[in-house]
Image (cartoon, rainbow, N blue to C red; front, side):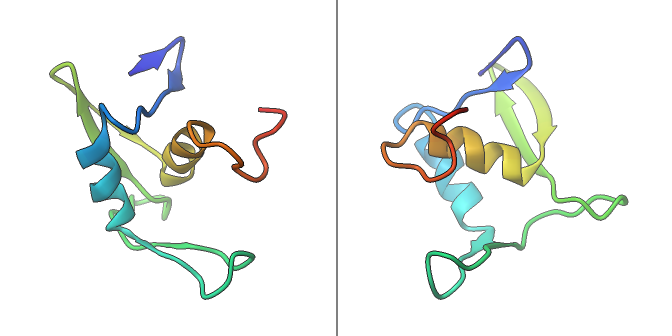
Amino acid sequence: MRSEGQLTVDRRLHAAEIARFDGHVVCGPTASDCNIWTGAIGADVYGRFYLTRDGVGFCVRPHRYALANCRRQRGCRGTESA
């Protein structure tokens, strides 16, 4: 769901969506390495992740989805002030 333009990810409600997202990410060998997006890429060379919620389809940038998902977990690095 999005409220006021903010994407939210619920680990139970969106479990299948999260699994699909995770299937498009290759993690670096250590925790400090970058992860690589292997899913859809737009003409502007930025990643795309397509969602359907409440019958409405829309597209988000993978880094925004990852952040929204991470915010739901305890101990996510880099989101303390978010």
